[in-house]
Image (tube, rainbow, N blue to C red; front, top):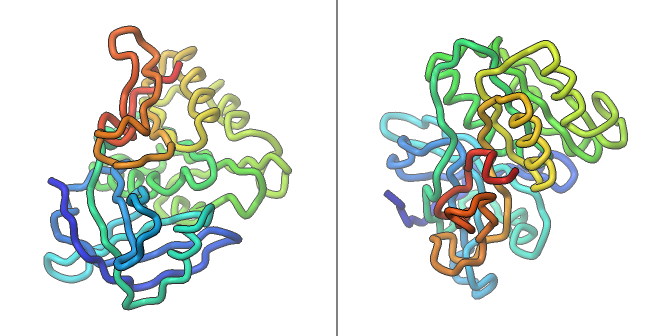
Length: 265
């Protein structure tokens, strides 16, 4: 069930370079939200942008009996996110969610991989927390974080604090190994066989991770990042090729944003 509400800003903090994290009040209905789902936001009283903007649910926090708070990790990339970064505590946002289909969460007894490229890490923190809650031993979870440079590596301390192993790769070599996130992932897979690979990041990265998973016959779910207009599956603005002749195209907002990686390869 989607809820439209006026959310109050509790904090809006700079994280790194152009990255920010905003914490909001939210309805108790979000207790049933699934990692990978998202919300759409508007600034009340402002005509621009005309349409809402989508943001992954980064974390849900308990704030007293039957009270929840939501964190959204975002990157300043345009006019709306620039204005969002300037919003002060006690300000208000028009929020609709949870929207879309999320990751499959279950208790795993074999190794599990989470792979993120840049801001693609946002929904994976929520996912890691839900995997732990489902009974997955976090020592079996390995997180692969990738980015252009060290300022694109986010949340590594959160994952380590949960008991997961963290591997970092940057294209300029300023943090972790120099290269793409798929480089250490491929190396790790030479000695390990995970039960599942979960991934979120740029489209090219997701295609590469999906191809790796397919070649090794590993189940893989990917959360696709794309521009959206309505966010409700009406406008066709977020249609992506489904990779099969039966479906043709699928809506990221309605059918996703999480898909079986076979959709991409």
